[in-house]
Length: 304
Image (cartoon, rainbow, N blue to C red; front, side, top):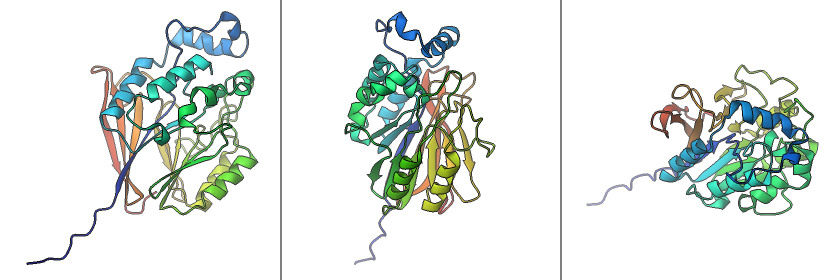
């Protein structure tokens, strides 16, 4: 007796997204004191007074990822605190143990990764995170095609004056992004550190926002981008534009939470048949000292 063949189930893919780990140099690798005699003195004082972003919390997130490895991992910037080589090297070593092959780990720089002009000139980010960048010199944007899912990685990281933290992509990168997004794909995902809009639907202050945010939004709407994943703002948020673009900030994975879900989060995006169908938030539990499932959002059919 023969029956009709069951329809094939759509291919399921998972993309994990974390941001702003702000990895500090390892014990015994403190940089010389004279290297703080520039803009880094502000960041150094902030570290001394607030002692935020424990590396152990980043390790807990990577352990959680390794326990159920996604098909790809994206990190939307601020891997370092002050753009020291020792910080990038420590972040690299930790990421290499997350259970995701290096060619499926996508990293982009944030403003802290371009903290000084000297660190940019020395290509500290590119050299420290070379296993995930594949080629030198690194040119932005970079693209990864995961089956029918196109991941477009951009860089809004530029050295900025004291007391500022804004980002900029530039006309050349935006044009290259427009061309790259025209490639055949079922879903398009753009990665940027500085969000073009905040949770309230408005741009951030000029001193810390994305100065090419309006053009980036316009380009994403034209290309039919489904998700725009970002960092910079240490509290997670989602905002959906009237045109249907979903902007998702994962928050800082190492921001210590006072309560479960309030901070210390990362996301897992579920794709079925190439389309985004759900977003799961994983949150650091300060009692268990581990990440756990916190919230799930189901995206409607065809939702972006």
